[in-house]
Image 1: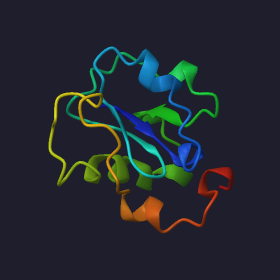
Image 2: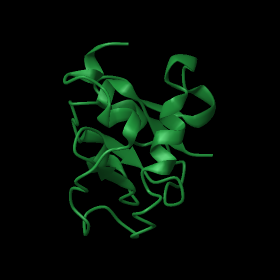
Image 3: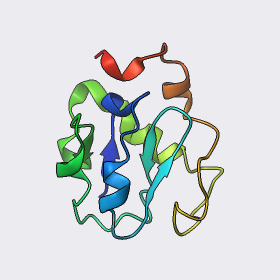
Image 4: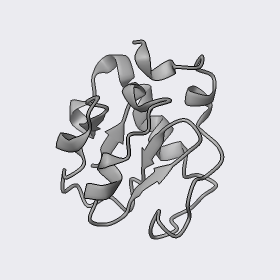
Length: 109
């Protein structure tokens, strides 16, 4: 199990969650942040600090954003498991689900 970042993060990327994450498993794409499923320790520190309520425990992810679980997992298919976002910096790509959204994609449902 892991935490998942959903649509409200798209084009916002507040980063408060990054500051709270004790294992540095929240990576930054071009349009949103992604939680690495293999590096997340399920502590939940990120969830309450998200100002737009974009972070959900996998089992609590609303149905309307169910595809974001797959997007968070597949984002790392060609990135692998770098062992910490800080040393990687921004990864200049997004999952195809996010890349296909119109600009300001986090503001709609």
